[in-house]
Image (cartoon, rainbow, N blue to C red; front, side):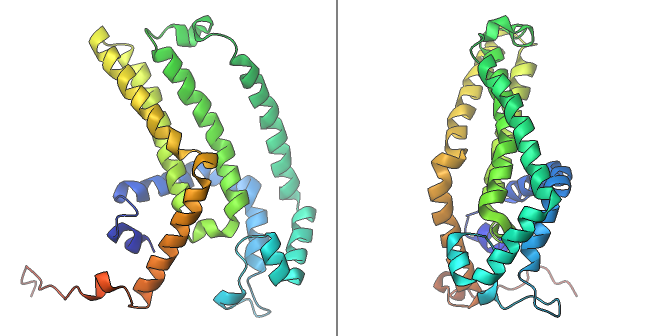
Length: 251
């Protein structure tokens, strides 16, 4: 799937694969602590009595109303196990604690940036950009949880949402580093940094969940169709490409 996405330009290059690995690395501890139990329950409903994978047509990747209508018994059993699973309540506790913390930050947004000593130390508007990047990084935690809740096991099949989350984290970190580094340089460099930080904000506007959820669904459907065509050798763009001679006589 990744090779096909890369070949057709759906994935831009190795950087996108690195972003996927980055998201996996920084979220590994959270996944083990708060999501592993729930994911194990979801994976178990796709196994037969002998422990083997069910046929593709019988697998459930997301617990939804449509999957309940199709497999009511298995979905109902999975939901019951999730409600009885300690990890589910631990995740809800994490959400509640962090929601309270984010409410504190939300009301703190009415305080001007110049009143915060850590941001006031940065010249020009660089403090505003550092504050924006930190707020965006805190929001990325919720995006990670949201993607797991919405896509569930589908994240292991079509990883476009996680690639976009990795891109978002990368841009926010770039803005933070840019603001702090330029603060130590001359005014001309600070002006360039402010312009670049604003360009990053514009790029981030298209990486939010609400603004891009519809396009993500359409993109994932299109990727699935492309991969299916390639696997079935019915993609005319690929099938017309002949074998190429090896340019180096390896023997």
